[in-house]
Structures are given as structure tokens and as C-alpha cells.
Amino acid sequence: MKKVYITTAIDYANGKPHIGHAYEKILADTVSRMFRLQNMDVQFMTGLDEHGLKVSQSAAKAGIPEQIHCDNVAEDFKNLCKKLSIKYDRYIRTTESEHKQVVRECLQKLYDDGQIYKADYSGLYSKTAERFVLEKDKIDGKWPADYGEVIEISETNYFFQLKKYQGWLINYIEAHPEFIFPTFRAKQVLEFLKDPINDLCISRPKNRLSWGIELPFDSEYVTYVWFDALINYITGANYLDKTFTNYWPTDYHIIGKDILVPAHAVYWPIMLYALNIELPKTLLVHGWWLVSGEKMSKSSGNVVNPLECIEKFGVDAFRYYLMREMTIGQDGDFSFDRFMTRYTGDLANDLGNLLSRLLNMGHRYCNGTIKEITKSESLEEDLQKLWQSAIPEIISLYNEFAFHLALEKLFLCIKAVNGYVENRSPWKLAKSSEEGDKQLVNTTIAISAECVRLAAILLSPVMPTTSQQILSVLGCPISTNWSTDAKFGNSLTGNKLGEQIILFPKIEQI
Image 1 (cartoon, one colour):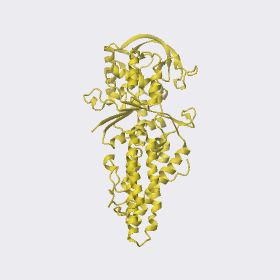
Image 2 (cartoon, rainbow, N blue to C red; image 1 turned 180 degrees about the vertical axis):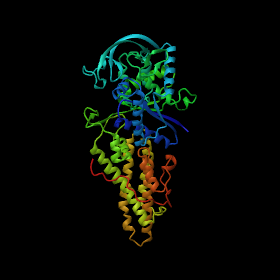
Image 3 (cartoon, helix red, strand yellow; image 1 turned 120 degrees about the horizontal axis):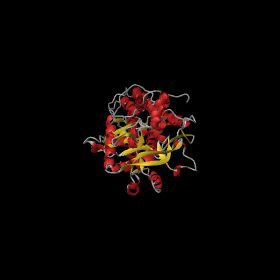
């Protein structure tokens, strides 16, 4: 069985979860479920980045120790995952003793190899980004808003020899087009690497910041939060254990575009290369969720709280909207009007009403038992051909991370089933005394049920709870393998239908 390791950026313990956190987790969970349904052994890891100046400041502002602050934030993010039906295998926290040991071992190895040196440095420092910056980072002569206050600092620190690997990294990216997806993001990294890069400051003096992992070779310093955080992915793959290569390297590392450069596409690959550790196979880079074309921010008051959306619409409706509306790599615009259109149209009217109608017909005309497909005419043959051709296309689109297109194709098939039921009108056929018409009633219900079963199986990576509900009322086991279950057939014959359920209740207003 093929093993697949999927990781996300770990969230920073300095605020409440928002839609960006939710989307990244849902995307990773969808990818993980998709691979599991293709008979792959998936290890999915996410977690929390708990060190750094901003975490220390937040704890101080709340009047509590840093670790207590991080424990509270970890509960918030774990609760979000639970509410979103995120099925991760490992949740890492960078304050764990195992992770601290891994970071120290990596630092010591680089230091012993002569790749870390101590030097005096004077430069510009972004408090918000928690890193040294250069004048070239300005946009139109101004510091980017997410840099916050930029101050000048002069101090002695330890540096990792980053710049000597710049040429190697350029060559690697150019020789491995699969390393960054979508490929246009690789151009962004190469553009950044056109100018010389500096060595990376990987320490902070304890007299300025004590909340971090102590350097193994100098107790007066702690590790720079980004160096610490980027090590977590090998910690999660059991770097200290002989089983490390069971899952490493990461097959898909899922991150937002804002932390691609320089952290994940420059610092991280060079760190791994210097440590003689294989690089991730693919960085899967997603865009931002905007509101009316603007980035969400607390100051503008346009932050979408995922927990509020879940409470009002249900988790699967929220998951569906995010996966249906976002094209991987591009930004998406969150609109409650658009959300309601998807909820009312795709989910309530197309899928929800189809299942409701199916259950109603099955209990009324077939005594709640799905009969065998015995009569097939052109309408049935056309519907069957549609699904048989669509299933491999939908799975292929999933594998290409074109989830919005996979869902579009799937719901066109669901619409076709609704159209088929309207054309057959079994409520009219049931009034006939002709044996052929009775067979058509049974066939209409059986074929409709089979199509709904297939829809549930193909929807399950995105809408796992809804999928389980549908399969349950059809008397089916939960699907675990697309290759055996995602095939059009007569598999439901004899199944008892469950009681009527409403998948997507009517929502009066936002």
C-alpha cells in the first residue's frame, strides 16, 4: 500500500481561528480522504507553532504564563478541527519535548558542520513578522502592512549559512517543476531569488526573548521561531526514530501563499538540504479568502468566523462552499449571497430534495425496499452512460486538485438524476395497471438510488458527514475504496430504505 504524508502549515498561537485556518485544514482533510479512498496509507499532520515574541507578548497581555496561553490556543484550534470534521493523524505542538529535542539535534549538527556562525549584526527588524528585513522589501517605498513596526536593531546573534545555497535552490526549483504547485508560484520564488539573499539569523538573545528553544551550543540564546517551526514537519514523521523514512518526505505540504516566500520555499528547503534530509515532493500553495475583494482583517471588521458559519449552516455546507468556490492557488471571495446560492441551489434543491424524493417514492411505491433494475430504456441507458463516463473524470479532477471542477461535474450529474425522475414521473406510472409501468417505477427508484449512492461516495472527501447520512439511509456501508465502490451497478437490490431525513434545512436569512 502506497504511503502518503500530508502536512499543513502549523498555526501560530497568537489569535483566534479564522476562515483561512479553516480552509487550509479542510483542503488538507479533503486531500487526505481522497487518497484514503484510493487505497493509500495516509498520515496527515497539522499543529500549532507556540514560540516567538508575539506569543510571549500575548501571554503577558493576558497576565498568564506562555505555556498556559498556548494550551488555551491549542484547545481553540483543536476544537475548530473537531467542528470541521478534520481527521488528522498527528497534531504537533512545538512545545513538545520530542520536538525540542529534534530542533536541538538539527541545530547541533549544523553547528558542528560549520554551517552556523556567530556575528554582530545591525539591521531592520519587523516585530510582526519576527524577522530581519531589507529595504528592498518595501512596496512603493513603504513597508507592507503585515510587517507592522520596523525598527533598527544591533546585536550579536547566530547565523545559518543560507546564501551559499542560493544557486543550488534556483537550480533545484527549475529542475523540479512538481516542487511548487501551481507552477506560477514557482516563478514568484525564482523572482525573489534573483537578488542576493542574506544568511539567516537563527537566534534571539534571551535578554530580548526567553520564550523559545534554547540553543544547544549557547544557553544565552533561544532559537528563532521560524527555524523552530519549520523543523516540526520532520518531528511529526518521527525524525528520531528508525521509522522516519516510512512517510518522509512529505508528499504534499499545504500552505498559504503569504508564507511561501521566504519561509517555506527558501529557508525550509535549504535547511533540509544542509541537514542531508530529502525535500518535500510538492508544496501545494493556496490563495487567500477575501471579502468583497479585500483581505480579511480585524481592523476592517470583515473577518469570517468559521464556527459561526458551521453553527448556522452545518459543517458540510461550509466545507462544500469553500472547496467549490476556491481554485487552488488563486484567491477566493467569500460572499454570503454566493453561499446562500450554493446552499439553496446545489445542496438543498439538487441533492437534498433528490434524496427526500427518493425516500418518499421508495416507501410509497416499493414498501421501503429497493428493487432490482429490470427494465432499461433509452432514458436509463443515457443516465447510466453519463455516470460511467463522469466517475473517472471526477476522480481525475480530484487527483489534479481541481476540486471546484470535480464538484461542478458531480452536481451536473446530480441535476441529471433529478431530470430523469421528472421525465419518468413514477408517481404517474404508479397509477397504471400495466406490468411494464410497475417495472419502470421500480427501475426508476433503483437507478435513482444507485446514482445517489455514487454521489455520496464521490462527495465523501468534501462532505463526509453528509455522505455517511446518505449511505446510511440507503442501507449501505460507509465507502472505503473508490476502485470497488464507485461503480454503477445493482448493488442496492434488496436494501431497506431508512426514514425520511432533511439534509439541508431551509435557512430563512443570513
